[in-house]
Amino acid sequence: MTDERRSGCPINLSVEVLGDKWSLVVIRDMMFGNLRHFRELLQNSQEGIASNILASRLQRLTELGLVSRAPDPTHKQKVIYSLTEPAIQLVPVMAHLGAWGRRHLPVTRELAVRAELLERGGPQLWDEFMDELREQHLGIPRPAGRESVFVKLRSAYEAALAEQSA
Image (cartoon, rainbow, N blue to C red; front, side, top):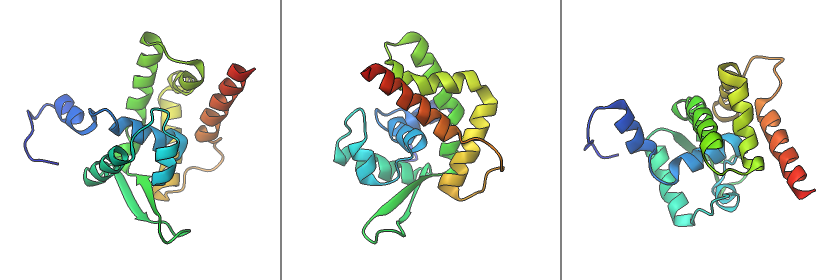
């Protein structure tokens, strides 16, 4: 990232990092979809991100320290992308963005259900989800005996999809 910044304002600096059209969408897909490979991110993008844009955003997010990349141990020609701690700490921001969007924009039920669960679950659920993301992406074991937030969010999404199809 360039050293030229408009100001030292924390909101401005955050917008300079995350304010483009695709960065938060890529982080969202890694966070809520557990998409970790380039092809997965490309093919499962609801918004239809172009491959050159995805490559550019992944490179930028890596340079900014929000995403890491490593060789995939299961396939020699693939890399696996992981969220870093600063990206995982965006969970509350994503929850608030989703809640705001749900209240003020024409969302679809199936795509809003996770935002609803995160809003209702509040900081305790966000902390549990961040612990789970730390386990998935950083290899840090989460406290035992907790129900998977990821599974709960995915199940709600899949139920809303099935309801829509019925």
